[in-house]
Amino acid sequence: MRSIVTVASPVSDTALTTLARVKIELDIANSDTSSDAVLEEKIDEASDDIEAALGFRLVRESVVETFWHEQYDAAPEKLILDRTPVASIASVVVDGVAVDTSAWRLDPGTGELFALCDGHPHVWIFCKSIVVTYDGGWILPGASNRDLPKGIEGACVALVSSFWAAKGRDPTLRSEEIPDLISNTYWVGAVGEAGELPPDIVARLAPYRRAVA
Image 1 (cartoon, one colour):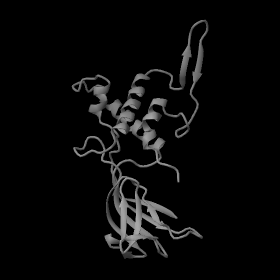
Image 2: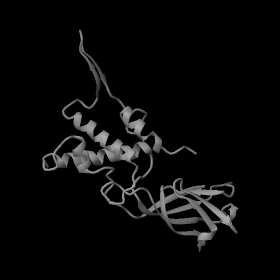
Image 3: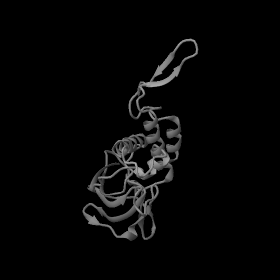
Image 4: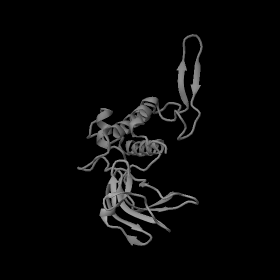
């Protein structure tokens, strides 16, 4: 089973925290706007890094996800929607025919969409495709009804703080020892590799990683 996601209503702001929250963490007065532009850039950078580390889109968007068979696929017992948590489903269309809400059951947290027949579990039967239109993801900080987990926002704030503390330092320098002679350790790596983010950030994000099927 394969699927492709098309974003119907893209969201422009994907920041996982707010400027005000970061300034509180860094003990910068709200009236001091001299660093706002830099901090906003770092918030966007940290948000992208965290999303890349988790491996899935976080912000809530309206999407259309199309599922289709691969060769020799058995009829699936469930579909797993890509954008979670699922806030609402607008429609489920099987081979061009809209399916009534009584014919499926959703686990919003995991994105598992189960087929039902007379209220009982069933397999998804289709020839061409199943198209699910839904809203999925979290509402980000800054909105009154935000629901992004505080742990993810905290990881973003901590990463921005580490960027701020590293201003003016060699970004590849991981450690430096001085006693009798200097011993330097430099970072070598790429986004997504193990250890790319600081260990404390990785630990904060661990509960939100998706299990590999």
